Length: 405
Image (cartoon, rainbow, N blue to C red; front, side, top):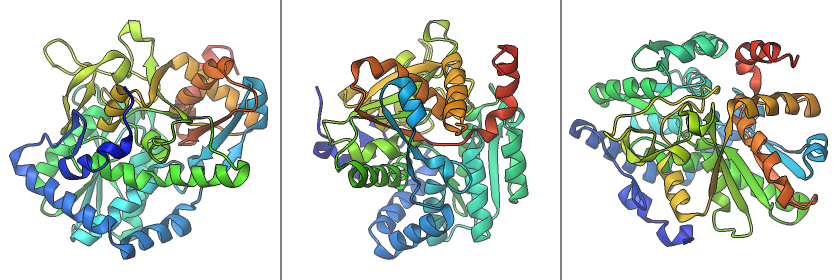
């Protein structure tokens, strides 16, 4: 049964809950830090001076507004009008800078003197290192050892920007493990350290706070399409790992019942294989990293390792608001495999001269599967949340092996 977002709109701010999901499942010693952050964020978000400073930085430093680009050749190939919201053109090359600028301003407002972060594909780590360099704060980034190897260009960028990158060797050495280590460190250092979480997960208020910082994407896209076409899009699409780029696009459209919304998870080698990162398609509700949400877990509640060709989607959970929207049936959550993402990566590069990151390549691969139900004049907005420079080292050998170069 579909429920209006407005009917429960105040609950997350008060309780940290999105229906049955969300919350603040952290050690008792960390509860005061989360509560302090909640109060500070609500105070800052209601302060016009804070909002004006953030808007100024988004314009003059991040390069917003990002364009809404119509992809004519790709649209002709797929059979609809497809427009990219060009978050790949932001400073640092992805949507992550939006949230990092908001959180670094909040850290300074709270008097914190050191910054910690986690990263998977490295884009959040790069954005965090960038804002720390801009504001002169020391920065430590936890990154899974597996991701350090497959995202070496971003590791170099973080170090060049002055960040200390700590490889995490526990577990599979991916995003889950990096977040585990960052949370452990924060527990012991919360008085002086600010933890910049990169996605709409973690304990309250992070899912709410990151969503609000990223909603600039959807607000801009809404105004841009109204200015260009005089109407809303028929469909919006974004990839889902933790889900910050998707929530940033989706949130301003949730009350528009005419707009169909798709979130695309990473199906890896295929859902039946068990080698995937599709928490909604293949998971069940549980608690991870401070919130209740859908997770990949076994019958005993032990986390199952996720798999995706994309380091940014290789996470065994999803943001709690996405879980809520899934159960409400407001957003349709689907998945795309590694192979499908590779095909879309190459198609977009050759038809539009835009090399996408592997993350939005998943979303693009799905668009072709829904076109049969659409008129050629219907409008699809896809969040091109990052550029593919970081993925070339991993992707090119795969394409060569498949004989597609």
